[in-house]
Image 1 (cartoon, rainbow, N blue to C red):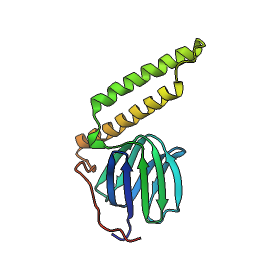
Image 2: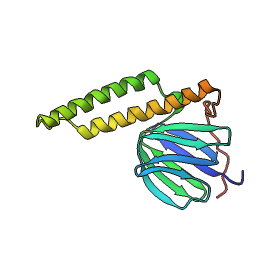
Image 3: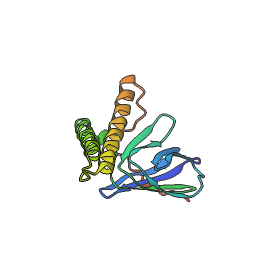
Image 4: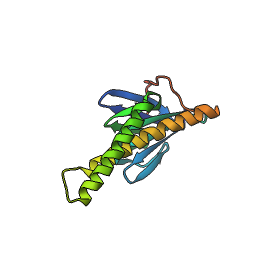
Length: 166
C-alpha cells in the first residue's frame, strides 16, 4: 500500500485501531482536519466527535472520541483519545438519554444564570450536550448507511499490527 498513512488510536481503555488508511478526518478544536499521506507535522487538541478512517474506497471505520490530542507526522497519525468508541459499540438508547439529561442541565444552567445563581456549570452542561449529540450523529450515520445498502463502515474488530515503514 504505497499511498497510505499509518493510524494509531488509543484511549485509557486500550487500543482502538492500529493500521493503514488512505485518509483520516478528525474533529480538531478549530475545525475538521483531513489527513492524507505526506501531511505536514502537527500537534493539536481534538474535540468530541467522529473520527473517520477511510481504509479503502469501499470501506470506512468511524470512531467516536470524547476529545484528546492529535499528532501528525508525514507517514503516521496518532490519536490519544480521552475516551474512544467504535461506532458499532455506541449504545443508541444510552446516547439519547444522555442527550436529554444534557439538554435539561443546560436549560437549568441558563435559568440559574438568568436568576443570578452561579452554582450551575453552564460550560460543563454545554460540553455534555455536545458529546451526546456527536455520539448520536455517529450512530445515525452508521444506521443510515446500513439502510441504504451502502454500508462502507467496517464493524468487526480492526487490528492491523503489521509493521509500517516510515
